[in-house]
Amino acid sequence: MKIKSIRFYLVVALLIAGYFAYASYNGIVYWESTVEKNTDNANSHARNGARRFYHK
Amino acid sequence: MATINLKAFPVPEEVACPNCRKITLLQDPAGSEFYVCNSCRSFLRFITDTDALVQKQANKLKKEPVLPVGAEGVLKGHSFKVIAYLEKKEHGTNYGWREYLLYNYEKGYANLAEYDGHWNFVAGKEFYPPLEKLRDNKWTFLAYEDVEYALFNKYTAVVTALTGEFDWDPIAEKMKTSEFIAPPFIIYREQHSEVVINHYLGEYIEAAEIATAFKVDEKLFPAKKGIGANQFSKHYSRWHAVSRLTGLLIALALIIQIVNLVTRPATMVMDETFEITRDTSKTVDDFKPFATPAFNIEGRASAVEFEVRSDVDNNWLEATIVLVNEKTNETWEVTEGIEYYHGYEGGESWSEGSQSTTSLLSSIPGGRYHLNVYPASGDPLRNSVNIKVTTNITVWMNLIITCILLCIYPAYCWYRMRNFEKQRWLNSDFSPYEEED
Image (cartoon, rainbow over all chains, first blue to last red; front, side, top):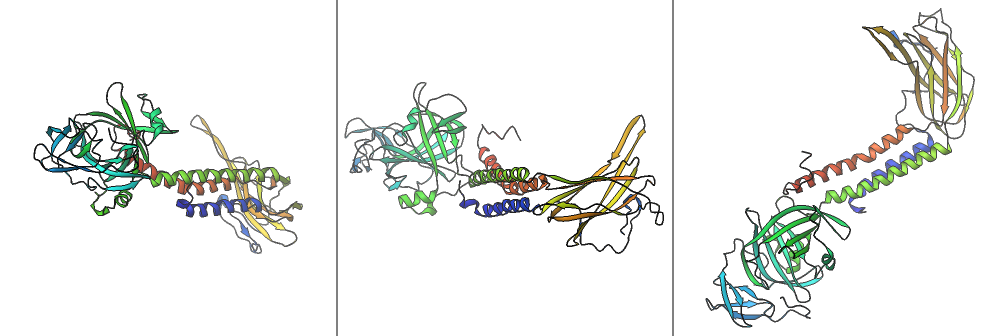
């Protein structure tokens, strides 16, 4: 295998594979649901129709 | 026959043309049976060691040879002397190429063939002994040294002009030739008669290497046009290396995924159905919020999945779920909706939506948690919602995204390689790409 001609791809590919291993170990999801972290729930708000909801 | 098994090149000898009496210098006087007079262009044959007879008149050269007859050089580890130059063409077409006959004092003849600026070093079984074992199978490929060579071209070669000396009559021969390629190599199968078939191996060689070997100015060499039949493809080389590396990395990613799946199996930490009641103090769709019992997420951080299920029927339910870490008060909030509608219309049953939905949260640290749930529904009589919480989710989408990312550059390399090969095979009547297009 001629590594020299693909050394840049090799670096990028190892980074991709390395991050995949890191994500697998730490439960990181590449495509997670829409999530709000540490939301301030003090204020109520609502939407109309089928998507209507409220916070306490 | 060319003089071989010597320790050095033979001493050149001058011979006088019987036609014009001008002198021509022979490089291998003992081995050459035919030669062309440099002055009157008579094609002569020696009938004794010293006497030659004019056989015919050789045509004038169309192109000046870039390697002069008599030039010496070391190529592929062998010492060569250029002893002849031939211009050839395919019988019945205008496709022409040039050959420089090289003489080596140990093994005999090889040649350098040039077509549209693309060069091949070509030699027979004297230089490549395994060629002796090649047999004519009349197939569209040849197997040589565990490499498959694909049929590229078939033609009858004829000599249109020549100069130098030979141990055979090149003007008389009209060789049926088949070319088989496995870049950067090419095998020529030359059929002399029904029973005599010779194979020659050619290797693509850059003009710069020839120029250096024979100490000739590279600028004199013809410029490359198009893609040579067996021209080395850097795109193929890159694709070959990239595809193997990518295969290895994808296999590695799959192993990591399987190890993760086995060592940290998915664990359901909650599967409960909760009663929900309308909050009459608010709008018509609002239900009372509630908190679930606490549960533990063990070990290091993991992906967590919520599944919300309710038997909505031609209606909807939406729930905002807040995951609360009881120690740090960190929260993660997701909102998911369920809609399920069905009916019978125009003689056909239909349905859309689902009675459940899932959310996936990334890297939730280990600890004690509970959920705050804020339901809403268009069905005022809805009275329950089921919530499942699963930790240590093996995220297959991560693997798919990783594989896609790893494959982007290999796909580009494959595209470039394929385009290069399609261009190469445009010059062939046996292109494997013709049917596709």
